[in-house]
Image 1 (cartoon, helix red, strand yellow):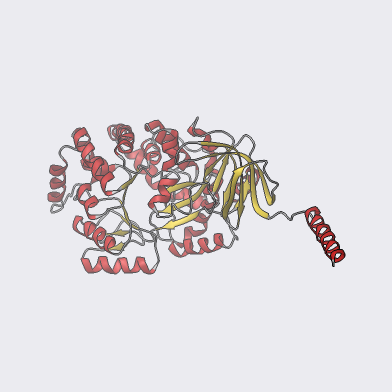
Image 2: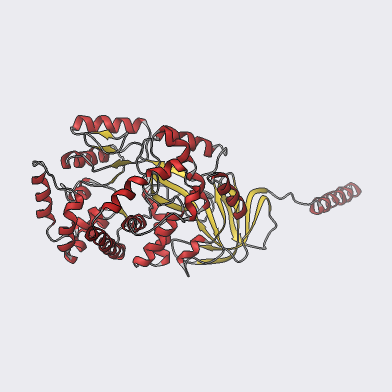
Length: 479
């Protein structure tokens, strides 16, 4: 009996030694980024010498490098590089009808090649195409950013943009919102070419009751304060915020309303000089506090304003990115270009002065607690505002306006995710988050222009090194 116990003990010890010597099989991740400095865009803190492991589209490991070995299908050297969440462009357009669907699709490559892993489509007429692209990207058949879309815009009778849902009565608004919910849109975009002030406010109220986010332009026949109190979630561009900064906003709004009954109603551009002349710091402070309190965000779109203000003076014939814009989309630039060249010199100078004033509002809103969202307004008809690069320029302009590099990065990452209600699953480099990332060769917190220095982009858990991105760009270059 004693001998048997010894024999069993020796056999067990031998078995354990054998197990100890047997090599442990390493998990094979989809992507490993090693020796990288992570930038926490929430705090601005740097985490040097980190390893980030990715599997099935998610971040599954974040820890100090060199502690373990890692096996990966794609290995990315992060030494001397900086990792940030993928950028968000919170105002783009896919539009132009079926004849421009293929041309719009090419912009998916442009966004990804410039580090934009998520975009928010703010109204167009290509919803079926967008749904098809989303399916193809999810299946890995094509590469491109995640897309949040509003579907068709809501506007008034005789709307400017094709495909808009035209509303006037509460019943028409309800029907339009039914259609958008059937399309499973991510938010509601309201446009101001023909919509009445009453229909505009009713659309916000009805959408609010349905749990739908609302954003968009705004007719000058209502005040921004009225819209914010109804539940407007975001205002696009700064024309509408600026009107609310006038010490005579109520009088100017009444003037616009009265003009609607005449053969020559007053529009936004007719009123802007009076708004400029009546700017009031106190009025600005009041509307910013209200927006912050009600959590109404703003998308400044500074870059398109700068670009359009200089259209008549700047020759874009040598723009390097123009070679990647489909000729059919380039043809849509002609309308704005012709209009700009017909403007009197005084009007051109006012536009430039207005853009300077708009920039001054950005740090004031930031200081008041208003959420700033970075958006480019790129897409067909918006002349020389190139997908991808224009968002980079927007972020740079936000810093020139007065934001810190960190605040500008937040406007292009976590602020967008918070607005769309997905902050818990993306826009951070942490275990369990979506693997949508940008690897930079220089620190953007030291110089925000370093967001242009892209070494690799990770989208849906797949890494695209700079060489792969360059090949993708060559594939869409005009022949």
